[in-house]
Amino acid sequence: MSTTEPRTSARVDRTVAGVSVGALAVFVFAAIIAPGTVGAWVTVGFEKSAAWFGAYWQLMLLLTFALALVIAATPYARARLGGQDSPEFSRFKWIAMIMCTLLAGGGVFWAAAEPMYHFVSSPPYFGAMPRGSDQAAHAALAQSFMHWGFLAWAILGSLGAIVIMYGVEQGMPLRPRTLLYPLLGQRVLTSKIATATDIVCIIAVVAGTVGPIGFLGLQVSYGLSTLFGIPNVYPTQLGVIVVLSAIAVASVVSGIHRGIQWLSRLNVWLALGLMLAVTVAGSASYVGAAFLGGFGTYVENFVGMSLYQGDTAWVSTWTVFFFGWFLGYGPLMAIFIARISRGRTVRDLVVGTAVLPPIATCLWFTVLGGTGIMLEQRDPGSISEPLTNAGLPAAVMTIADHLPLGGVLSVGFLVLTTLFVATTADSMAYAVAQSSTDGDRPSSGLRATWAILMGAAAATLISVGDGGITALQSFIVVTAVPVGVIMLPTLWAAPLYVRRLAADQRLNAQHADQGQQRSASVR
Image 1 (cartoon, rainbow, N blue to C red):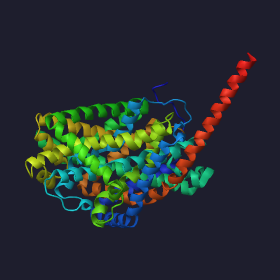
Image 2: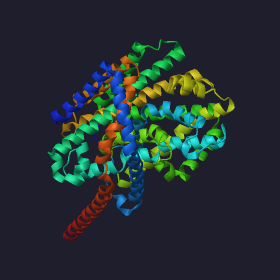
Image 3: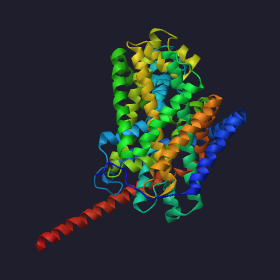
Image 4: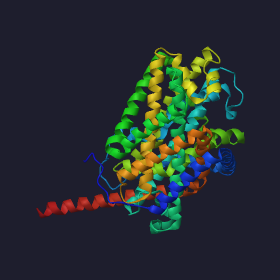
């Protein structure tokens, strides 16, 4: 198997690429010229989207996960996807690319901060809890698991990837429009609705990727200021984004077989090393007990937490925000996962996206967030006050500072976060380029262009403060409204297509066996 990206003569879809780039440019310039107005518009759009579609998104994510598990449990799940007899990547490389693409900056800053937010102020689903108790700690972890666990991963890589891979086998393009193949059939090749689908999905994922890039500049700049006294000013933030963008460009240009999978594996090994260091330096027994308690609470209240609508303001701010964000990523993540999953069985795909990664994510959140809760229990205010005063990056910096070799751990977390976001940027740049190309693989120039554009947009937005980045990141919830409709056909099409694949492959195998028997009889 070649380890280089094949040359391609694929043609850029100028309508899709042009409108997508134009929409990003308009948003960036508007945010610079009138940040208050843009922020107000996005806030209104966010509130309306959450109020009108939040419950639908919660139900959709739950059904997606449930159906994925049901499909994986059937005999049909032995069917192979992508028209190949064996996987293109080893299991470790494959899962590493999947995990690092989703976690992004959330893999460090949110993992440290979100459990602490919920520990200090108990999620309304659980009601009032004894302040500082282990019960409150388990509820805080369970709520974080709900946002970053099974439902989030399922919408990103299970049913959507199955539908796209089946459509590609039928001659459809590796683009978001193929999600509408169950409804439009061959018309996805030329329909204006299909073109609009590509554009909407690209805008959603670009908004969701530019946001973390911008926040990374702000957060790492804060960390560098805390650790080394480097001024927390725009040039420092810009330097962080330039470095990240350079890594992403180099990775995406070298292709999936080289840069993207190599960077993903590096991320995983670094994350494992930091997990071990924090667990040993903190308390392995506490982390173990917190994981079991938090995960048990999560499983016990799984359906109720998934569909909770009691405190609508809280649900909109937390659950609906995260679910809308992940839903907006859904089509492009499905494309990326479809691209790297050729030769995998359906069961492999479900377990490798909707089961193993979320469990690993919950453990990661326990190591960081659980350790922060332990420190807060021992010394109330030691973690929560810096988090309240300085925001997300303060949580991980403060947690590391309370552990042996805190400076080394802090640097490690800053490096890991940068690489996590770079991996998301390169993977999504690849997926966006693929989505705006009429061909099997996008050119390296187009991939690099999208990586540069996303970095440039983030650098421009943070020049006017974090308001533009916040608005853009919230805007993905607005774009999730049409994406939620685009992803809807996967609920009935994926089970149907899996059954068809299994039947076709079984029939082909029977024909092959009969052919071999006839050849043997002739000989």
